[in-house]
Image: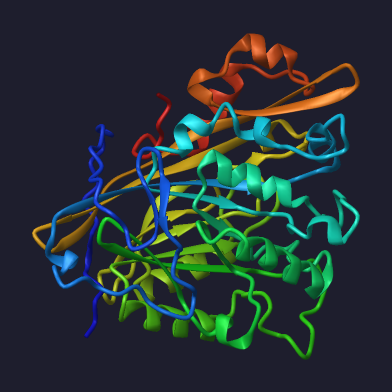
Length: 397
């Protein structure tokens, strides 16, 4: 039986406060504390449907997604403690209040979590401490997208170490990299408040590092045949299909032909939401329509960086996708879809860099004046956000 309902594309233009139903999910966390109720299902199995048939019950799910968790050397150094250990909770402390209340919180893990199996490193071949992942989990993130152009920076061993990290944290889900052919061939599902989400993640490439001949399944690539296969499988079990493509042109705030081609493909196949990363800057949000089927897909072409030590002014402006999905009388709809601009802030004190992320609405000119990067202001970020994101989706509140 095809479980997927048609997504209704009526979006409320003014974001309202959403009262989130607090029923137990099959896995994941319960808002607002988001305490783990049980381990998430493995990628090898779809969530079971309870005998009460939650597909017929009214429900609401709030989803947020942020961009690149891009861990340069200075960010690694910022977490070093006096005893030589690492703790990165401070990176996400100011933003935790917006992550924890969401039913589903997604972050793009741009750099490989290879941990202490390798020397820690930044650009160009990244390797991040496991403590980065632990801090992101502590902040409230539930889903990590891991298919990026840096997935193979530490070879297949790096991916194996990253998967070992996630194996130690069954309270969260990761997608995009795989431990086996079986994992590669299996769609990952996440159920919250009785609504089942299929989570798909692909990257355009791996910076010229080839996939190993004996493990071509280790990273999900932007392969049209695979995408078609995954979406068709997802339709059988999911109410909502979300694709997280790592695509586009770095440092370009314009949508490329490649992105438009794949956005149209996702739309024609019936994907409901697309949330893109890789350009390190914001790009537009829009509805894409398939003329033949009439399907409409909500597309965030790029939500930019979440936290990094990149230095171009426009790379400091990221975005948090804010989406509410509801079931009412058996029909699934996206009842609100916005983008909240964010600012990656860093300053230097006593020879050490300090990092934080703020909502643009809470950023100040005083903070901008203390930023390491010159010529920043609230007005600059506001104008940049407004020139990139249409009023229909922009949330500066």
